[in-house]
Length: 441
Image (cartoon, rainbow, N blue to C red; front, side, top):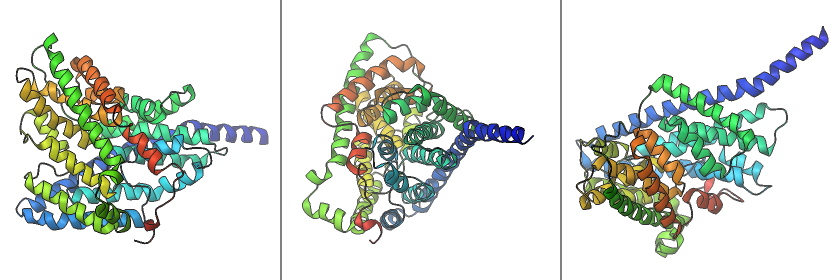
């Protein structure tokens, strides 16, 4: 009888570790993804309600919340800064010996709370931050926490859990399960292991089911309506869009990665030695850009890109540049916040330039091309980029043009800069140590 009980207990525990635990964690990733999306929308709308009757309030609110966000990040939530995707890449690909330190400093409940709380604070201040990259980081952190329950923890197990959580996070954020899998393989893992296959896809499925149950079967950017058929002449907009997106995406990468070289010495010294004063200056610049563009650069850019894609609210021709500048200033300030939605909105802004040259073609089609191209240029993950945009817009009829744009723009960007997330992981998190200002600012 004792043997039977022991055998039953062993099988139950094994079933819990193999099925119950990862499924529960994946459901939690999906749940938090939906809540985080709702919270992001709510705080951004609150910001708009505050400043709509009194635009001057942004000149106080945005700098103030930028300083508060940077202080909280550096004082208590170091490791949660930025999009979160470089942290996941670093944890998976860091040299041996750094694993334990990276897991402690870049993941865990502290980082999850900081990622959500401070990024929402940024949106409350109208900063250009997205929620998709943070959701990837949160998903990876949740799945990584389940590793505590396994009796035989290993580096391989931790990396499988991180990969599965990252895929589930992107799937839940965009409601794009296929893109979640492709993203994990192309951007995070850079390879594919058969033993990771089941864990990752299971996590994506359960996170996706949770999102589906709570938010419905929605398209992130709505239905892509392309009038007429695409002819050979459409190759011209594809080429121009790929070149424009590739160059502007490379410029963003170079600006973010090499700020010590182009930034004036007094300003770079302020960023390193007086991060709160630098944050204040950043907030003032972001507020000035937002006021100067009549609010077009506030927030992640999702609303502006969606309106342009629907044809309900045209943007200024300068939107691509002003949103680009707002994203650069926001990211260099050092708060938690993602790049996906802002990058897609910048792509929509570029599309207005391309469409001005080829007014005979569909505006919606050009927007799809440029969103794909700019995202591919920044990440240099072309497959992930066109799969994401295709799933977000149900744009299966645009697969070949989007694929071509993504491949060409990624190749052009690669001539001038490395892939952004991978470069940030190597630059900031390999052999990672918290900055001296992390504990005392």
